[in-house]
Length: 175
Figure (tube, rainbow, N blue to C red):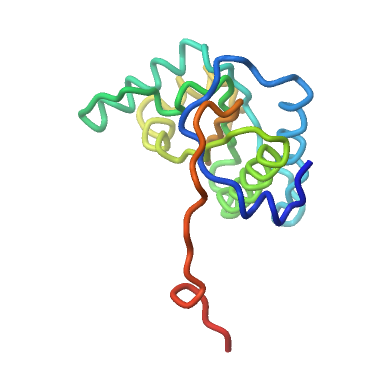
């Protein structure tokens, strides 16, 4: 397991996965990292829908996403990852988006620490909160009253990418 600062330094978005599924223990460790994230007033309101990448509703969701963008794609929106995890929270709770963001970052760092690839996804928000919201909520086991916040793809890396460069001078002010 990597040191957390090393995982932060080395993590990058994975846009290509091996077909082989990650182990149950690896998947559970990633989910546990999300569950352990802090939440506003300790509400622990974020719900995790774990979906196998071969689920036919994901293909339909991808097609709906492309319709809305008028295009086509060589890969599906989650780059053929063996698992997609959708994080949802109570509709109208102001802090759910922040809480889901904290949870998904914990998951991304846990995945990196375990040697897995991951991709944090917001691109399906319009479809997940649009006219077919109830349909997809039911398909993905999202509890009644919850709404999509963010999605997370995870699996063994088939491709690697260097982490992004950053500039402390450009992005930080010390006062």
